[in-house]
Image (cartoon, rainbow, N blue to C red; front, side, top):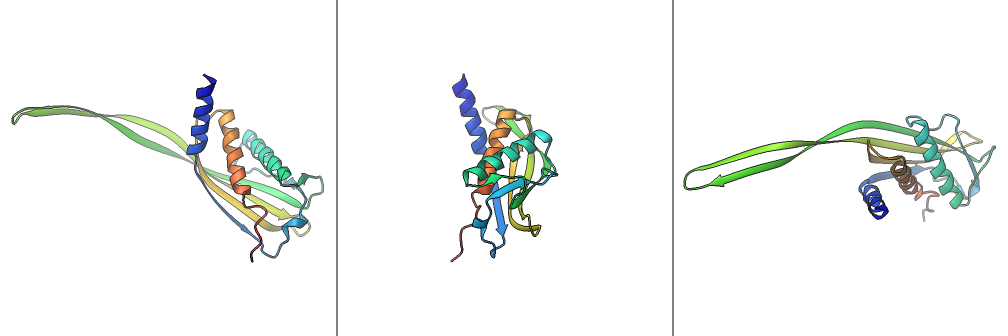
Length: 174
C-alpha cells in the first residue's frame, strides 16, 4: 500500500509544472554573499504553515550552496505569494447508441468532474543588507491542487524552491 502512496506522490509532483524566471544585478559579485536571513514579514500571501515550509526549503537549499543563516546577514530574503483559485469543469460523456435500417437512437449524458486548482506565483527576492538593494529575484508560476496533504505540500514547495534556486548564484556572463 505504501508503494502506491509514493507512486501517487511522484505522479502528483511530476504533474505540477512550473515556469521559472529570474533576474539579477549583473554588476554584483554573488560570491561575496555568505550569510542570509529572512525579512520579518517574509511570506506575504502564504499561510503560516506554507511560509514555514518555504523558509525551511530555502534555508536547506542555500546551506547546500555553502551559505548560512545569520543574525546580521549579507542578504535578506523576501517571499511573496499571489494565489488565484481556478475551477476546471471537465465532463466525461457517456453514450449509448443503436442503429438499424433508417432507424436509430442515442442517449448521451455528461458527468461533471470538478477539480479546484490554485494558480500560484511565488517570488523570492534577495536584498543586499548594507544598501537595502534588490540584487536577485526568482519567480515561479505553478498550479497546486486545492486538496493536497501536508506531505504533498512539503514536496511541492521543495521542488518549487529547487527550481527557483537552480539559477542562483547566476552564471557569469562571458
